[in-house]
Length: 160
Ligand SMILES: [Zn+2]
Image (tube, rainbow, N blue to C red; front, side, top):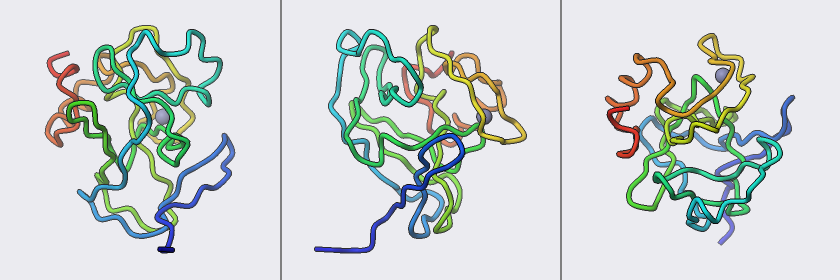
């Protein structure tokens, strides 16, 4: 069956963007992360650039690797319109705001991260941009509260 694609990939100033190609209502599931589940010990030793870092943390020692699909390409934003929900070893992306067709889809990478080594420069352009993105424990308390209330903080990061 050939249907209308849900997403369009565009080229932005800093690389590829995943944009909605339909309206997603707040609360709606956008996609499932469909890459292989990997142990921390199975990750590549050196990930040269953020563009090569296509590993989504889903447990203290568990990650979902690249799928080859759009789920690999979704950018971080400090003021995102979606968030990842982790259940067991599965991760899905949900709209946390209404997303219009044409809008870039983004989520906050820090929520899943539990790794003191991990940092990423951010150029998302949001007023609240944190500039250097780090693991969950370092995000502002008010932001933790926000995501805790929405239910998007994974179990392994709750209480940090
Ligand atoms: Zn930012």
